[in-house]
Amino acid sequence: MALATFSVRMDENLKKQFDSLCSEFGMNATTAVNVFVRAVVRERRIPFEIQAANLNSPQESGLQAFKSLRQQAIENHVSDLSLEEINQEINRTRNGKD
Image 1 (spheres, rainbow, N blue to C red):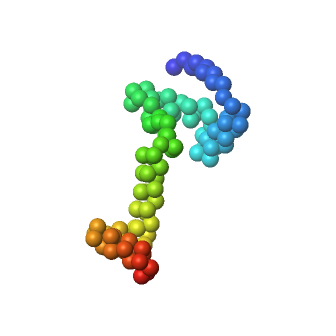
Image 2 (image 1 turned 90 degrees about the horizontal axis):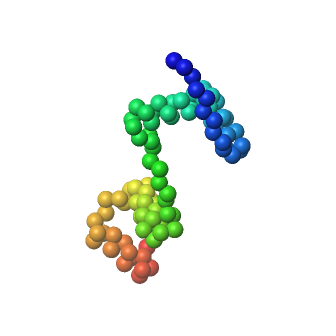
Image 3 (image 1 turned 30 degrees about the horizontal axis):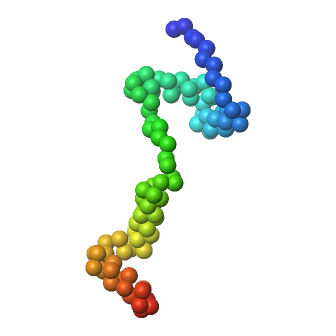
């Protein structure tokens, strides 16, 4: 199999970080790029999702807030409360009967 050279320009700091991470994986940058290219050819797609998150949107902010509250409910063992029980807790808190 004949080999070809593939040249890529990138930020020097990014390359240093990439080289360091590849080293932690036990490979060099060339091997990592070859792994990526083989996956793209095999799967006929980019093997990960490319997406720009709009963290400033009201929907994204609301979703993040919901996820945070959901995690707190799980940690506090109250994730299985009914809507009625949740409303009772809210009313108790509003009335200062905590």
